[in-house]
Amino acid sequence: MKKVITSKSENFLEVYLNNPSPTGFESDGQKLWLEYLTPYIDEYFTDNYGSVVGVINPEADYKVVIEAHADEISWFVHYITKDGFIYLRRNGGSDHMIAPSKRVNIHTDKGIVKAVFGWPAIHMRQQKEETPSLKNIFLDCGCDSKEDVEKLGIHVGCVVTFEDEFMILNKNRYVGRALDNRVGGFMIAEVAKMLKENKVKLPFGLYIVNSVQEEVGLRGAEMIARRIKPDVAIITDVCHDTATPMVDKIENGDQKSGDGPVLTYGPAVQNNLLKHIIDTAKKHKIPFQRAAASRATGTDTDAFAYSNEGVTSALISLPLRYMHTTVETVRKEDVENTIRLIYETVIGLKKGQDFRYFK
Image: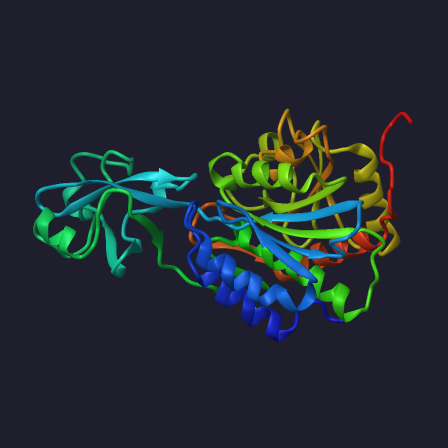
């Protein structure tokens, strides 16, 4: 099998992951993504909140979407004390338990300001066991007063991201913050690249969508779905690798990194499209796993499925360890197999294909 991820692709992935794209402030990451995608598309457009869409065959009436979300979890500056310490609010599902001792970047109009999450020494906590919470975690940016903090350009509403960067673990795992879900943006861009390199002529319009604001309620997908009005939407996001310690498989299911992409069953997933994806995986010998969602998938699939008059939608997920931490981890072969599955699924679609149950 031809190698899917090249060294050039991997270099882009590293740059893309290291660039911060917090919810509501995704523009720099979107520009990087679009620059990488541009050689493989016919045109592109953006919306008012920053979602970016690359289009192949824009004149076609039948529209197929492949989508990921671009935003990462982060924090907002919420309150600055008179002594120069900074308290925060979540921007998305940031995990307060991992914050103590982490280094961060505070994004200001004057540029990046470095800071750390302070935490009392263990010697002073032995008499009173304290656990991190939004009421007691704070940032220290080296200032002695609120005035000194403000002189750095920091104010209420500044966004804060962790500093941790990309690495490769044991040659087969990608590690970093914001793999959820910029690795999805990477994968759909690689699909567009493969279509171009293999000179595939699609009989429909393909919309490669990198949506914003998923982490705060699927808002970017909700907006862009109404604009595109697709016939079919294939969403890619991450899901939990449940094969690590401290995870209850009875509660969370049985998915494991290295065993292939995960296909979800649930109300928002259109069963005939899901069958097409499963048949594609079997035909091309692409390993896959299965998961079940109760009520909602919690991904942009829900936004697309219930948009307009109802859009035929499905979800292809990448198993990921340690979600919403700074060491999110995926297996390289899972990334490659997810790219292959999306690619083969797309080229196996027919123009005007009707997935309805009753016709």
